[in-house]
Length: 366
Image (cartoon, rainbow, N blue to C red; front, side, top):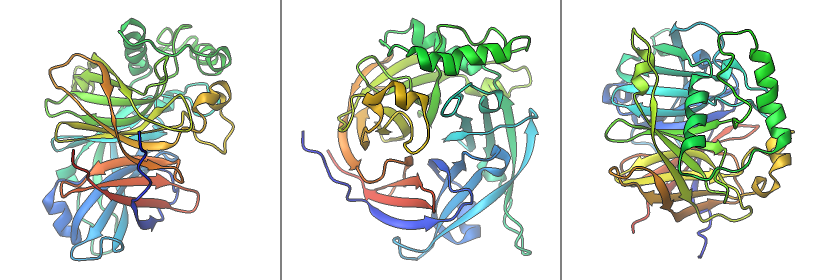
């Protein structure tokens, strides 16, 4: 198969301080756009701070040059719900007026998995207050739920019992992420929700289907033959009910993605456009930092970041999806978010040490 080069346009370098943006989802509320003088905008999350400090708006000035004229705003959050740290935001998605953010549920580069990574949060986009005349940041009420390893348990049970053949967990990685976590949780309410046979689960992408099902894209684990995994769940809103409940897995998908540079590919982000599932896939963990997964799975160290798409049949109950190449990003391994703007373009966000980069590429037909 021919591999399409990186033909995306570099639109903007945005200083978010810290420059660790993850995920991307389009702003739909027209009043929010009009109040700021934008013709389009996207939400993103920052993964190196608490989610209460980690919401950002990336907006484009109406009538401006698409290759320039981008602005960034941090959104102040009035946090409600569960107390305690909620770090490592990695995904963001929309369900109607609700915008959901997800912690990674993962344990960083070397483990163990921490409670502060086990959370889901949401806010109403229409509830974002305007920026004040005094320059005060826009603000929103953010409801945070600590899953306390319940989502970890739900995902692991589905991977163990489902039809996909999941990659074996390397002993050194198991020691770092699972054995150490079990020891740390001993005597706590979460003890027993992490088990010896588990994988660490790294959630890096999220999207809602038109029927309201949640798709979570996993950077790890992958299938035994190296395909990225997408988990479909129903009932995510139960976590925010007065009588709290938990979602259930209804399907597992393996994305047969045409990639170069490695035999293993994990999800970096995903979005739906029409009936097509668009997924950015790439390496299993970022370079430049000591990573147990990079050490134990060298076949996934250098996988080229790639945008692929596949038709998602809403009536299907999981399985393997044959994906088509859209774009490669051989020079940009840290693409962290993808969103379609509804006007014929995809936008991507990548986090770098010096700035967050926003990119654009035309939608392709066929």
